[in-house]
Every structure is written in C-alpha cells, then in structure tokens.
Length: 411
Image (tube, rainbow, N blue to C red; front, side, top):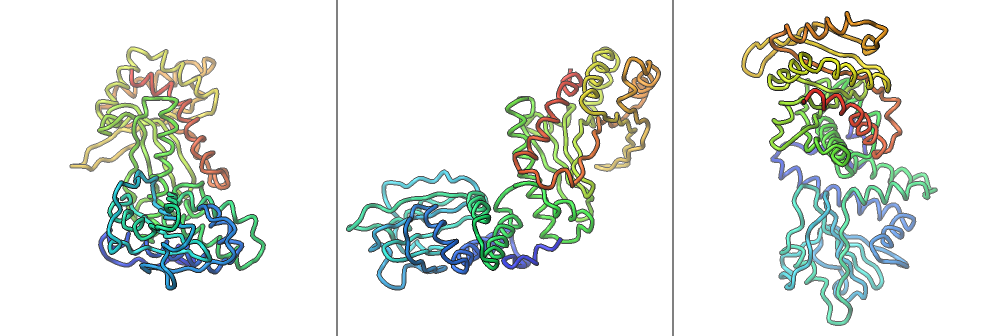
C-alpha cells in the first residue's frame, strides 16, 4: 500500500497538527477544483447543478483569490456560498455580515451570470461566523436576491463523485475522478465507506505513517458508526474506544460498552473488534479485576444459565471459549499464558459435563485471568465489496446476538 501513488496525495512533511491540517485543507480544495476543471463539462456541469446552479454554459475556476478577475462576484445574478466541512456544520448566518477584508475564499467557480464562493474545512472545527459573514458580505448585492447558502460535508462530496463515476465514458476523466475519490478516502475526508484491500494490506508491512494514520482514522469512523447502530438496539453500548495504532502493532482494536468515562466498559464484560491482515475479528472479552470477579460469581452461582446462553449462541455460529492466566510484570505490563480452549460444540448436552466443569473450575482457580468468547475471523474476501452500511450491520447484528451472554456475565 502506498498512498503517494495517488496523483493528488502529497507528502505532508513535519510540522504541527495545525500545519498539516492547513496543508491538507489547501490540497483537498485544490484537488476538487482541478478535478472539476480538468474533468470538463461532464464533471463540472452536474456538480454545479448539485449546488444549485443549473444550465451553466461555461465555468472558470480560481484558487485563493479575494474576488473575480472581471466584475465583482456581487454583480452576478446567481451567487452561492458553498461551505464544505468534514462534519455536518452547525453554522447559520447571523444578522450582521462581517467586513470583506476578512474574506479570502478557498476557491471560486464562476461563469456567465453566476459565482460560487467555496470555503472548506478538513479538521474538527466548524466555520466561524466572522469568516462566513465576511464571505456573505462579499457576495451581497443591491441588484439581486441574497446569495444562496449551501453546506455540504466532504463525505457528501465523495458520495456525489462516487455516484457520478458510472456515467463517465472518457478514460482520462474516469481516471481523474477515480483518483479524486481515492484521495478523499486516503485523506480521511469520506469517512468509512467499506473495507478495501488496503485496510488489510497495511498490517503486512505497517511501516508508513500516513497509511497508519489513515487506517486508524478509518477504524475510528467505522467504530463510531457501529456504536451508533448498536446503541439503538442495545442501550448498554453507550460508547466506544479505539486503541492507539503504533507502527509495530499487527492489529487495531475497538471496544464497545458503557461510558463515559469509558473505564466503566473495562470493568464489565464488553465486546470488541480487531482488524488485522487476516480480517475482522469480533469477540466478547472480560479482562479487568472487577469484570473477572463478576465472571467468577456467574460461574459459581449461575453456571447453568451461563451454559444455556452459550449453547444458544453456538446454534447461530460455533465459537471458542478462551481462558488465559495473566501475570503482572510491572506498571502497564503483563503477560498472558494460555490455560484452556473450549470449543462451543462441547457445551451440548450430549457432550456431557466434563469439559464444561473443567472450564468452570479453571475459572475459579486462576487468581488473575483473561476470558474471551472468540468467533472465527471474517476474512478480507468476505468483507471487501460490502458497502459501509453492510459492514457496520455485520458487526451490529453479531454483537446483538452476543449480548445475551454479555448480559449474563454482567449479572
């Protein structure tokens, strides 16, 4: 995987996070304008219609210019303030417009009778009233109706170009638009749209910091969407937490449970996902002292109820019970030693009680343990090609089935 093979992607270099965001903001806006300009009428005409300018006969483009080169934008009959942000904007125009000297548009799209002023944001911040008010003052006109305000997200822009792609016939235009779509994905502007081969290939080498940041951001968005869908069906899952992805890590995980503070999740049985080169793993885990204490109590007092819940889960899909002994080596350091693996088929009545009783007894004997209900890993070939919605639903439905066991474990 090499993000820099994309024609729009650039080396961001050293600097503060604010410096990198500003560089990315400029590059994303530049990539949008160049895609519209070089893509020709087949690209800019539907884009203009999408933002409210229909029937344009020609279009010109500018970057980082205060106004149009001939006749001010205010003289155009149709004027649009187009704000594109990473997240849905909460900005709304105020009563008073700001001074025009505060207005330096990121880009212009203009032609006979129209002008679109483009203001873009790529970080977590929203449009500022002072800045947007200055743009509105620049577009204000005594001759024509007030300018139209159109607010979009980069996810919306990604969706527009993704939907446009099948209608394009020119090979060069297809390449250009495809590269722009990929650039939005690699720049974390589109959010999670579905698993790609690159999500899994990263973990084979994991030596590129840009790729690492991209994978981490993708898992963050994917986990947030899973949590939102899961909370609707099981309010227990109030929050999610994505682990730090270090260069040496061979996987990236996210955990789902109560919160905030998220520590409440770790103190209970909860559910997690892990992405690696092998695919997507989904599991129930018990790992801290308060959670393992509850597990021991369930095994002692509700053993039959626990076994019944596990058998019902096995009827949907087989799994494995994982039991490790944990040794504390120092602050924030521990070592897990495998103690027992029990396949869910051994929970059936016809299998007898020996295996189950041995498992339960081992739980009680271990002073510090890790317990996991581990499902088979979903391989990349089964994930690549799923829409973002379908990938999220795959996890939500699996977790929903697992929750009966989580509920028993948490008493």
